[in-house]
Every structure is written in C-alpha cells, then in structure tokens.
Length: 200
Ligand SMILES: Cc1cc2nc3c(=O)[nH]c(=O)nc-3n(C[C@H](O)[C@H](O)[C@H](O)COP(=O)(O)O)c2cc1C
Image (cartoon, rainbow, N blue to C red; front, side):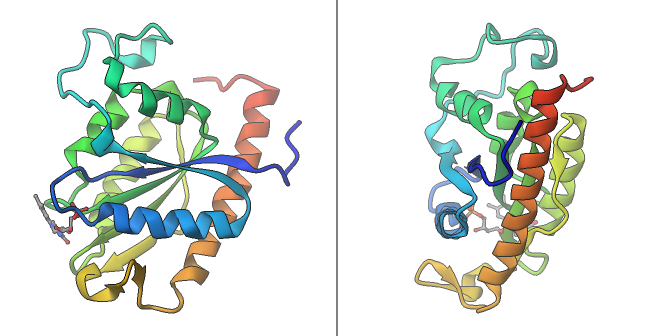
C-alpha cells in the first residue's frame, strides 16, 4: 500500500537536444520547483546525453521486456523511465509539434510509461509550445500514460525569462498546482499498479 506522503520518483525529461538549446534552463527551474515542493525525488534526464538512434529494432517494444535490444548508451534513459512514478516532459515547439528526439525516446520504450502520470512544461513563440503538448498528449495516451491537465506554458520565452527563471511572478504558483496534481496521480497510480497489474 502506498503512503500518499511518500516521495515519488520524478523524471524530468529535457526534450530538446539541439546546439544552443534553451531546454536545460527550463528543466533546471522546473527541477528546483519540484525539489521545493517536497513531494518528489527529482531526477533530470537530458536526452542530449542519451544514444537515441532513429532506426528501431524489428519488434515493437510493446511486445518485449528487459531483453529488448536497446543500445548501451540508452541505458540511463531506460532505467530512469523504469524508476519513475511520474514524469515532467519539458518540450519546445518545432514546426507545431515536439522534437524528434522526444519521439525517439518515447518509441524506444512502452511499458515504462504505462499507468504513470505525465505533466508538461512547454515553451516557444506565440503558442508557448502548446501545439507540441497537444501532440504529446495524443501519443502518450497510446502508451497508457495518464496526462495531467494543468501544464505550464511559456510563450515568447526569449523575453519572458531572465537569469534562469520566468519573469511572471505567478509561475511558481502555477508550477505548484501542476506538481500537486502530479503527486496525487503518482500516488494513486502507483498504488493501483501495486494492487493489480494494469490490463494493457
Ligand atoms: C526546427 C524548429 C522549428 C520551430 N518551430 C517552431 C514553431 O512551430 N512554433 C514555435 O513557437 N517555435 C518554433 N521554433 C522556435 C523554438 O520555439 C525555439 O527555437 C526554442 O528555443 C526551441 O527550443 P530549444 O532551444 O530547447 O531547442 C522552432 C525552432 C526550430 C529549431
């Protein structure tokens, strides 16, 4: 039985891997918010540090287990996904969607996402990365993940952030709402997973 006061393992995924990216700045601020919240053991997983080839093995990971033939350099991502009871995906918007690096990270795994909650923090131009989040919600539902309604979105991040944090003083309050909801779902779903196997 899960004690709802237990800390949950939270993996914060840095979705962009391009040179000169802004993603780590956002992820670092989000990690600080999560540590201050107190409900999580926080781990930041940077996809730029992970081997993520586009060519997948013959069989879908949906029908495989630990022996799925992933490259050795993917192991830190796979074990972080495995450990996590909750995820925050930090994503920019590329051409009205999310980066290919995130799609690869998702497609190389399956059960690691199942019956776990995922929240989103996005950034970009006018839409603040919301197009990326809408696509991610769609994709992660296919993997039986549970997406959290209240995301954080930063339009025009290039003027809305300074010295590693958002200028909007309400941002920490919005982050707390997201983290409260994520913690609730993390506890509820962990308890459910421990009570009975998810019927996927
Ligand atoms: C290939 C590409 C496509 C982009 N498309 C969009 C877009 O559709 N909407 C948007 O708001 N910003 C778009 N941008 C701008 C990004 O939001 C901005 O470059 C942001 O810094 C990207 O995140 P990153 O620095 O972590 O890679 C695009 C950037 C790139 C590199």
